[in-house]
Length: 235
Image (cartoon, rainbow, N blue to C red; front, side, top):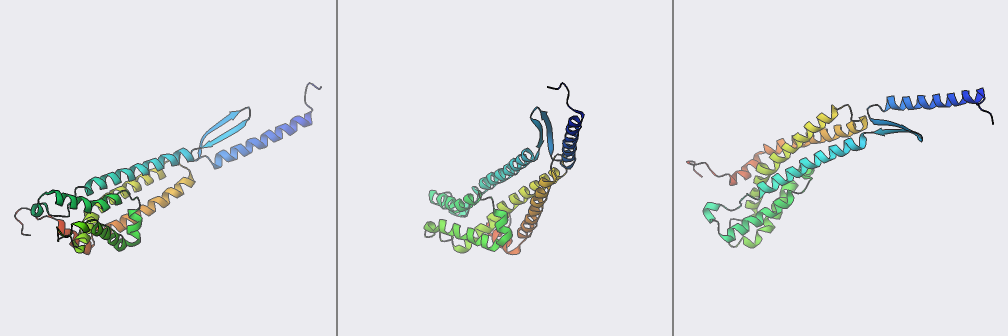
């Protein structure tokens, strides 16, 4: 066995090593904004990107915003009263009727697609919630005749205007701010940034839709049925 390799063999090895090095350097340059680490071992070179951990963190943050929003909507909805507490008092029957009216809206608080449905067709969304409320209080309509379909529709509008829209607007604003912050980071890849831009733009569309609904005269007029007059004001 020869102690040293032949010159032509050594040259071939050098060319191969050089080629591999050039490829590795090219990959590092092209993927420089995605690489989280380069590790060299006896088995070869391992290049790790940061896309998975970066995206996982983004998803966790968005899920937290959605979860917190659902919780806030649920708590606020539970305090709504479709029956006038001054007129009906807080009898067990009145409390039960109020709870039944709130239940469909509390269930709706856990739906994470309010914005998509509202942006698609707000009238259909409101009609659906009004129908749910009307069906929920049907057994109480004989005892409380004021629980008409019109009253249920007004109640759905009141919930939309006073509880749902403000909380959705806040959540969308937080998401837009977070997406913009992520887009400014240097450790987020171009691929992820394309997705982030799409998500941000989608939430900007939702905000525009929410703002339009919040100032809709028809919704505001129906919601005002449940706005109690201030002291000294005539009903």
